[in-house]
Image (cartoon, helix red, strand yellow):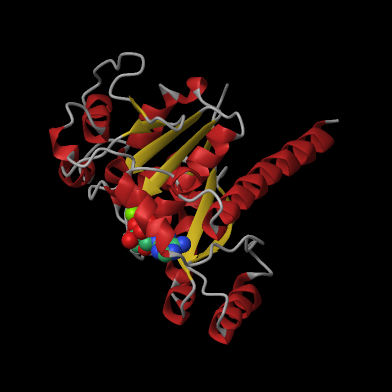
Length: 273
Ligand code: ADP
Ligand code: MG
């Protein structure tokens, strides 16, 4: 195996990066994939929402693994990786990761420390999902340098949709300077209140502004308090509220993500034939 590495990134907070990472990850696991989700946010929201409410008490987290790469120490197989009842593995984060981000600034090959860590576990998974922090700092650049795909969750509001420009510029720069393999899978509209005309306008604005260059996922994630409850319980939306529309939407997103990689494989096979 050589995992697909997908970063979920947007420098804005509260746009459902973490929620999407959890539910896409578990959705992929339910489709029979072998999935690792990596918490690359010092706030550790994903670690908490996967059932580890006190990340600072975990013996090993991502910052330890990146520290080992920085100091050239060996990493044991499966070191620090936790397992969630719903079938995904987790590399957790804790607040130490913000100190790690500071040390990266002066490190050699500072943009590829996360990639070098993931290279040690990549063969064990079909998919690795990286939950990014809400900034375009060194940790996010590391995620973009490690990934071959990016999903951009975007809250269905006017300003978040307008604010994508800076993110797309950064992705472009990473692609040109560090990681030419990086592709944008698409922009994912989240927390959509489909009862309002406003939501329809936002969706139309997004498709009009970016749709010619970047895919906007057909699936839109509806707004529902069930999504909030699920993360508070340390569960996916599929377990917490299986018949909820958010569960259906994340299942559809999972299918769309798998379809994208099938199409890319086909395209590649066509090119080499
Ligand atoms: P980010 O990682 O981008 O900061 P989160 O995934 O933490 O965003 O989501 C921000 C907040 O919105 C959280 O409280 C989360 O539970 C809530 N949320 C996420 N998705 C939905 C949704 N579909 N409907 C309602 N609330 C949601
Ligand atoms: Mg988050």
